[in-house]
Image (cartoon, rainbow, N blue to C red; front, side):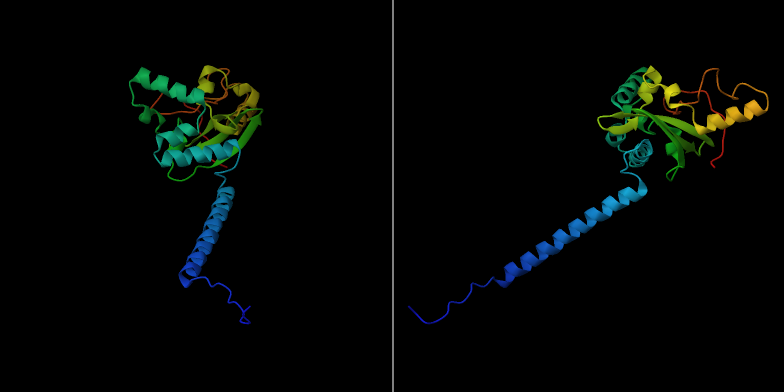
Length: 213
């Protein structure tokens, strides 16, 4: 046997640099992932709530991505859009353009409040800056996520009376009661104002104007 000690194998400098670069890229990717997650949590776009669903819908409308908009709607709402497209002879992209709500005309994310949840149904009031009024948007939980439920609203599957009227309607009703009136101006008997508007789809009776609080 030789008395000389064997040298430990050395790693070529090129491989060392490759490993180092790989480690840096891995850490960078992890950092970006953490930032995106925390950013999503801060802005609410990733939150599991009807309000979070509206924020995702708003972002999809602003991206002008029809498939992204459809992904934030229930299956029945997508079917409703198809029916509207055929009936009005309107391109399906045009029907989805504003996400079935005038609130998306806003350049920035509108004010939302008064989220009410009843089982798998919910409503959220969103400020429509174009018409200076609140829209009470319907949502339903489908496939484990909250989605806009305009199709269910028009078909009667969405039970607005179960979720209850929005704050704007409640305040208008309270004001009318104080004045000795029984009806909210601009609303038909039995209506709770829970119907979104979309200029490209179906004209709907206007709701009373209310300013954000």
